[in-house]
Length: 88
Image (cartoon, rainbow, N blue to C red; front, side, top):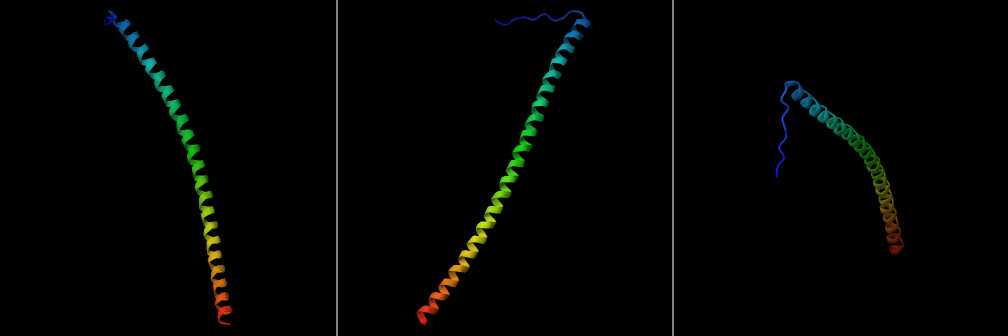
């Protein structure tokens, strides 16, 4: 069964009740904002870490591309050398 709450009769009591409710809401808002700021800070750290990882990945890809180009050039040289020996 629902509980019936008494409503303050005097205007001063109503004002006090409203101010208490407002204070509680402001406290909740402060806590939520602090949590939001903490989350933004954590997100900033995660993004910075991700940026570093992407840069490392790009550097690895660049090295791998260079290694592949060098291996390709070496294979072509060996192929030319083999052709010369076979014609020779």
